[in-house]
Image 1 (cartoon, rainbow, N blue to C red):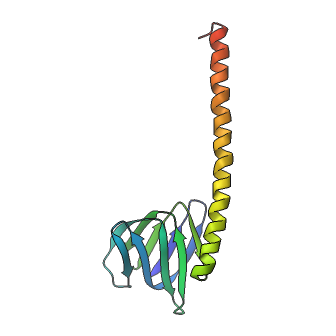
Image 2 (image 1 turned 30 degrees about the vertical axis):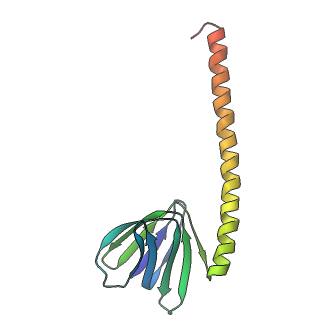
Image 3 (image 1 turned 90 degrees about the vertical axis):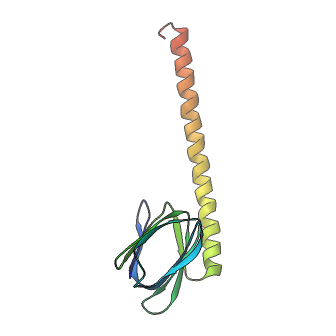
Amino acid sequence: MRLKVLLPSQILIDEEALKISAEAENGSFAMLPRHIDFVAALVPGLLSFIDKEGEEQFLAVNEGILVKCGSEVLVSSRDAVIGPDLGELRRTVEQHFTEFDEHEKVARAAVARLEADLVRRFMELEQAGHV
């Protein structure tokens, strides 16, 4: 099977996989190359796959959609992190989401400033009698 993990800004993985395991709302599932075509909504959790060398690879996925069509498996997610083993992946996820939280705080502060400026300008227009 050809596994592609797509993020908004990049293709995280594009390689052959012998087996893929993921987590959906109704539980974990696994796919082999001759599995039927289907679509699944992924929940935040682990996605693992066996690469063509027989090594198991792990990804932490923050929700997404998995589509299997023929020999191609596409996973689209807002965010995912790859790691060589579960211990390293846990540390990577913690660091990644800490950075993500910091970026989100900065973005929220910028939006709050824009909203406050917009309200202030409307009040100035109202006081000037233009509204």
